[in-house]
Image 1 (cartoon, each protein chain N blue to C red):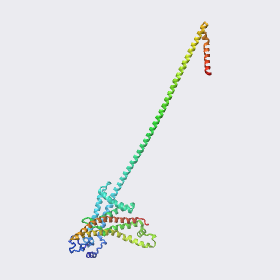
Image 2 (spheres, rainbow over the protein chains, first blue to last red):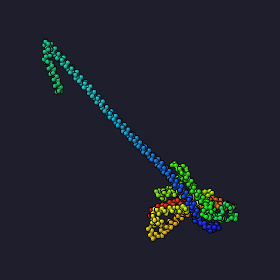
Image 3 (cartoon, rainbow over the protein chains, first blue to last red):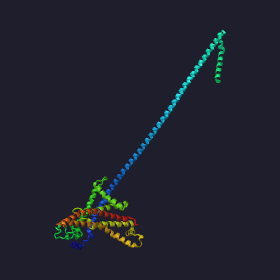
Length: 184
Length: 275
C-alpha cells in the first residue's frame, strides 16, 4: 500500500489536481446535455405544460359556465313557479269574487222578481176590488132605485140615473167610511 | 496522467488471506482512480480513458432519455413523459422556485435541471454494472461544473450590482459591524471568492470518492477473505457491499440535489439586493 502511494505521489498524482483533458471532456459532456435540454427539449415540454394548464383552466371555466347557467335556469324556474302560484291564487280570488257577485246578483234578481210578483198581486187585488166596488155600486144603485120605484110606484130609473142621487149617496157613505177609518 | 503500472485488480490475482498474500497488495487506493488510456498516450495530454468514455456516454444517456420523453410531448403524457416531467418538475419547483423564486428563477431552470441530471448520471455510474466507477470521483468533472457556476455567479453579481456593488456583495459590507468590519470583510472575501467554489466542487468529489473507495474496500475484502475461516468474515463483508450499494444510491441522488441547491443559493445571492 505505502509502496503504491509513494509511486502515485512520485508521479504527482494528487486527486485534487484535475487533469486538463478530463476538464475538457467534462465541459463537452455537460455542454452536450445543457445544449439539448435548454435549446430543444425543455422548451418543448414547457410549451406542453402551458397547454395543459390552459386546457385544465378551460375545463374549469367550462364547468363554471355550466354552473352559472344551471343557477340561472334554476332561478328562472323558481320565478316561474312563484308566478304560477301567484296566478293561481289570483284566479282563485277572482273566481271567489265572481261567485260572490253572481250570488248577490241572483239574490237581487230573486228579490226583484218576488217584489214584482207581490206588486202584480197587489195590483190585481186592487183592480179586482175596484171592479167589485164599481159592480157593487151599480147593483146597489139599481136595487135601491128598483126598491124605491116599487115603493113610489113609478120608475125612477131614468131620473135617478140623470140626477146621480145614488152616486152621491154612495160617495157620502165612502167618505164616512174613510173618516171612520182615519179617526180609528 | 498515467495509470499506476503496479496496479493490480483484486480479481486478477489469486491473492487470499492465509496464502501468504498481504491485503496491501490488493487493497484499494489512489491507484483505483487511475486508468490506462483506452486511446492515445497517457504521458501526453492526448488520451481517452474510461472516465471520459463514461462521461460522454452519460451525456448521451441523459439526452437520449429526455429526447425520448420530451421530443414530441403530449398534453396527456405517456409513462416515460410522466417520469421525466416528475424529475423536471421536482427541480423546477422544488429547487429553483423555492430558492430563487418563480419570476427570476425561470431563466436558470434549464441550467439547474441539466446540472442535476448530469451530476446524478455521473454519480450513478458508480453502481451501474461493468462501468462501476463514479465519474464525479475525478475532481476534474465537479470542478468544471463548479467553475461554470462560479463564472455565472460572478458575472451575475457584476451585472446586478455594478463594480462597487460587486465588492460590497462579495465582502458582505455592513456598516453596523463597526470595528470588526475589516476582518469580517476579509473573511467574507476569502469565503465567497476562493473557498466557496472549491468546497462546491470538493463536496461532490469527496463524497463520490469516499463512496467508491468504501465499495471497493468491501468488494475486495470479500474476495480476499474467501479462504478457510475467513469465509465467515467474507460473508459479512459481502453483506456490507450490498448495504453500501444501496446507501450509495441514496448518496448519489442526495449529492446531485445538494450540488444544484447550492448553485441556486449562489445565483439567488447574486440577484438579491444587498442589505
